[in-house]
Image (tube, rainbow, N blue to C red):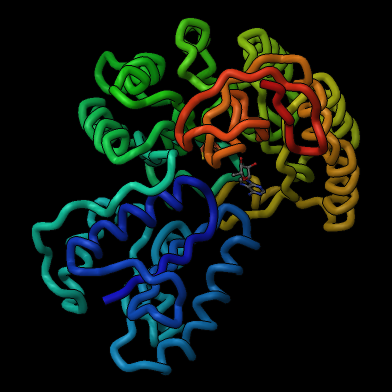
Length: 408
Ligand code: 5AD
Ligand code: SF4
């Protein structure tokens, strides 16, 4: 049995796909590199914006033909869109074999067995960790209730994994060649297990033999605490890059989004991060229902002040059942216009950030023999060749677009 994984959405979904694959692997499955050679396609889906859900559902629609081409083929539809749309999907897509919503991930093995479509579980080693980055999910779900967001309803409340289990998984990935550990969670820095805080966990994970660097995704600004900043200052293994979604630069909109912080608080936190030498990338939503021209202007001026490394910009998308979807909506033309203006502003941010690295010293984790990534997340090309997986200390001689060149 060969399984092809088709994942839509975030880093968390990629990790979830691997976790679901591990259950299939324990039932005798191998990885397929294309749908053509696969007996099973696992579609792991996203519903954060309407467009993401459309893509997942239309992909499913196109699988009707794939399924007919060979008897015994199976389709599993999993993740956030599967959670939202539920078993009802089987009416529209009768060829669909199994629906497994995002809340069911812990139950996936049992679901496979209950379906009777797969062989029973055997004693097997987990699939081999690939590449230099080991992904470890440390928490799932979200306890915030941002008014635009569907995630809490499809993923449920926060559940943190025990720290011991996270350390074991980290050790296993490091033993299989991971040099960098990426900790994952919807609000990853809200992590807590008894008296183990997120800052403690970062330190403990970085102490696991073989771990050279620790990253995490996606943090919430409310949990950028003095405790966290202290951990970063003292521990060079914590990466000097953070992807911190701000969503808006207007205090009024942030309040209406129920984000739990103001523009002023954001500016203070961003300054503290920059003081630690951390580069920041972000997510921004334009056209939230109550966003005025002035509110949008506040987002633009915040972008000017913040010196982001990159900003991913989204048009607000109403999600069924969320409070913001009940509010009077702005016109699509306004959303498009604002997105256009913001995109023009953020287009050159990365090139600018790259240019500013010239003259600095960076620790580069070599992902190829002559190319790697610095702790603050820039791509660096080296003059000499090095062992893949080693960390080299270099001075940055010049920048060309989104590539730095080292002089050694
Ligand atoms: N509309 C537009 N963008 C959204 N995001 C989350 N919900 C919505 C929505 N309803 C964006 C946020 C989040 C990113 C993953 O998706 O910016 O950080
Ligand atoms: Fe959604 Fe807000 Fe939770 Fe992030 S913090 S997943 S935006 S509700």
